[in-house]
Length: 426
Image (cartoon, rainbow, N blue to C red; front, side, top):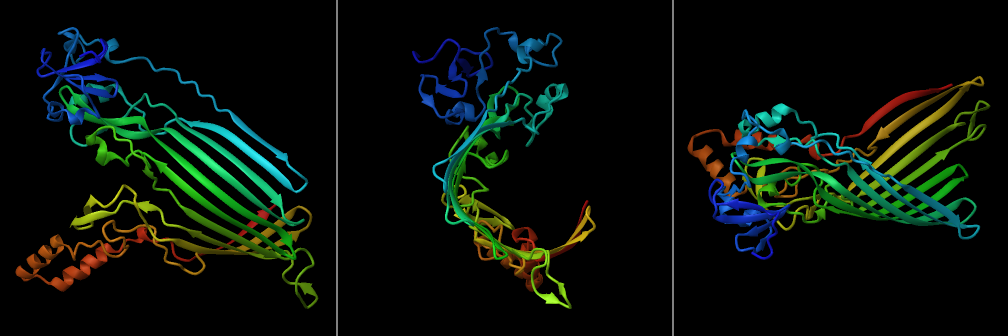
């Protein structure tokens, strides 16, 4: 075909045969007649593993077999390529007037892969013997790259208060994700890691700050965020790998559409506050209250609970459903003591989740509930119940045990916790 280049890879019907079934140029696949396809999974013969790579040298596959005496390392391996990363950072701020200020910044950050990179010679020597759901490490992963921008405006409302408005944009590139290669001679296919994923985070933030005025300091912040990408972690697209290199944008697992944060701090300075027996009992003491409200993170809803605690069939899109809002109230009470000029002591009581709110942080995908997976009400569950009844087993014991099994502490936030401590300053 005219659109097939001389350097394209050729796949034939038999081992080193002449009847062409497919062509490949990098990640781009073509049928035998030159028709482009989205991936090898759209070519029937490749799906069934009935194609073979065509070698320029018919004897090359023997020299490329790692256990052969004539094995040629230069044909299969290459030296590590040095990677040079430039990380510029630019930030500036300038006043518009005495009460207003404009600021912006631009950053590029890179991070070396911290896992999935180590591979030894034994991994390749026993490559064909490793079967099942084995994921091979990739020692040639590139660093993950993050590019972010922010612009903002700050305006003083009075001598003690100000507002700040900012817009934020971040790109995440070369993120690590699973990748399946096929067709592969002998093993048909294998899975490894590659720099495939990308994502974006877009956010708008509004903040109000009140400096300490009559013992009170106040900070309030609201953030509107949109976090989308092709994968939330290195394993997030494992179920899609057999369908080719699919890269669709969907909400990332950590996407929080709304976040509200309020901090109020009330404290007395030296020789301030009420007096008892001639002493300022609340001097150098204060109370800090933090209120947080966050909209629910996304999850993928499922259609049918096909067995206990498992479900199948996606409803809508990936991460198209949302968990409930979470609200938390935290409290800290502390007091400073001074012993001489160089020694200070801060005694505090900190209460996390003051109201002991039972926030839902995870749910069963069919029902959207943290307490019911929908199995007992499904056809599969009803069949299980009839089986228990027909075998004269204790149905009530089974139902009670199943309800107990559904209880998962990881589906809820931590309960109220109290911390009493002291900090020594010298």
